[in-house]
Image (cartoon, one colour):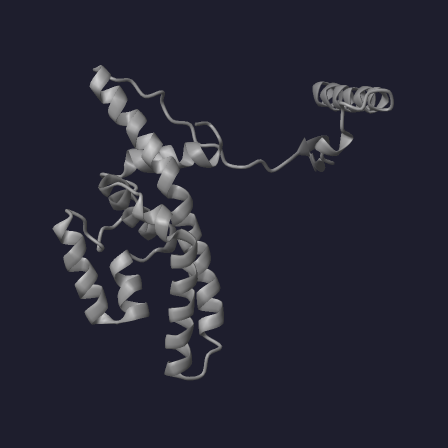
Length: 202
C-alpha cells in the first residue's frame, strides 16, 4: 500500500510541477493529461486507465537483398492503395444509409449511377495510374475493409451481368474480383503492415 501511495503521490507531484511550469512555458500543455479513474482493492487505492491495444510484430529479417526490396515494394504499394480501400468502406457505409431510404428501384439505380459518376470524376485518373500489382492489392483490401469482395459489391450494385463482365476483364489481367483477404493465411504479412501503417510506425 505504501508503494502505491508513493507512486500516486509522485504522479501528482509531477503533474503539479508540469502545471507550474506551464504557467511560464507555452511549450507545455496540460490538456495532454487525463484524469485517471481509481478503484479500491483490499484497502489499496489503485489508479487505472484504459489504453489502446498495441500489436507488436517481430522486426522483419531478410535472407537476401531481393527479399528486402520485395518487402519495401509491398509497403510502398500498400501505402498507395490502402487509402482507397478505406474510402471505399466509408462511401459504402454512406451509400447504405441513403440507399435504404429510397422507395423505388428507379431511384436506387439513379442513386448508384450518380455515386459512381462522382467517384469517377474524383478518382478515375488516380485509379487508372495504379499498376496491376496495386490493383490486385486494392481488390483484397476492399474485401478486408468492407467484408465484401469487389465482385459481390459490383453484383449487388450493378447486377450479375455487369459483375460477370468485369470479372472476365479482370481475369485477362491476372486479377480476380472474388479475391478474399486472408489475415491468418497468405495475407498475414499484409495485415501486419497495415496495422503498422495505422499506428504510424511505418
